[in-house]
Structures are given as C-alpha cells and as structure tokens.
Image (cartoon, rainbow, N blue to C red; front, side, top):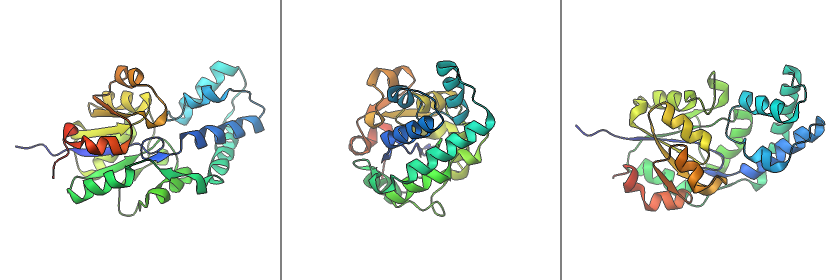
Length: 224
C-alpha cells in the first residue's frame, strides 16, 4: 500500500517574502506602546504564537504586558502590516510549487501563526482562495507554533493522518511543531533562519526557497 503524502505550508517566509514586513510592523506597534526592542530580537520571534511572543517580550523587557496592551499591539501590528500590502510578493517558485502539487493531484494546505487579518494579504499575493484551499490561521486553534495544533488541524481538513504530512516552514518554530506531531519537517532558508538552526530543530531536508524545493520535490515524496 502506497502512503500518499500531503503538504502543509507555513506562509510568511515560506511561500511569501513577508518576514521583514512583519518585523517592521511589530517594531512600529512596539514603538507606539513605548516598548523598546531591537529589530533583530523581533525577527527571532516571527513564526511563534502571539502568547509566546508576549511572554518573551515580558522576559526581555520587563514591561507590563496586560491583556489590553496585547490587544492594542496586535491591532497596531495588523494595521501597519496591511499598509505594506503592495510590497508583499510570493517567494521565487512559490506559485509554481503549489501549481505543481495541484497538477500532480497531491493535496496541500496552509497553516500559519498569523491571524486572517494579516494572512489575507499574503493569500492575495499568492492568488490562493481560502474558499478552495484549506487555510488554518491562529484564529482557528487554541495554540500556535511551536505547538503542532495548526498543522494537525490542516491535515484533518485534508482528511489525512498527520504522520503522512510534509510540513514546510522557514523557522525553528515550524520544525519543532512538525517534530511534535510526528510529521516530516522540510526547512526553507528564505525566512532568515540558518541551515544548522533548522537542522537542529528537526528539519529532514533544507532548501533555499520554494523554487529550490520544487527542483528536488522527489526527495520529499512528490510524484506525478
């Protein structure tokens, strides 16, 4: 019996060149709240859940992060990110990779720690319709990465066991989540994390970007 793989994609830094727009949007939101955090520290947190993000903020800055302040930060970040919508572009090969999977009749879905208020910008850049393709956002699960809930929910929407899934992401948070749900983790360097970081977090294969992954799709179970 042949086990058919399904592919579960992160969004920011994996399919869409948007990591640094998120970093700058968070920087704007934090500055507005009077919270001083270096840009490089923000970048290291992109891809994790909002709750973990704020917990790390509290540890690193010592400032009071109330529920009201968290909500203001989220709303300010979303507004700042949407203002950059015209600069958001798919990463090289992203549309081609998704088209190849569709043509090969291999199921795929998107699972992102972002909420739909920001994910919608990225989906539009990819020409992905969430009414057609399963898209699981932070709004739909209890916990986000590094918890595996997003990927488990995406696999469920595809009607596939999570153990048959290939999780494709650009951050250590994606790879840790893949390991926790016993999926196969594939890392992309397009989000700014290093080769060794992704490998140590559990990546089975690591490629430069979606175009590079498409060129080696047979290595991770892609067959027509």
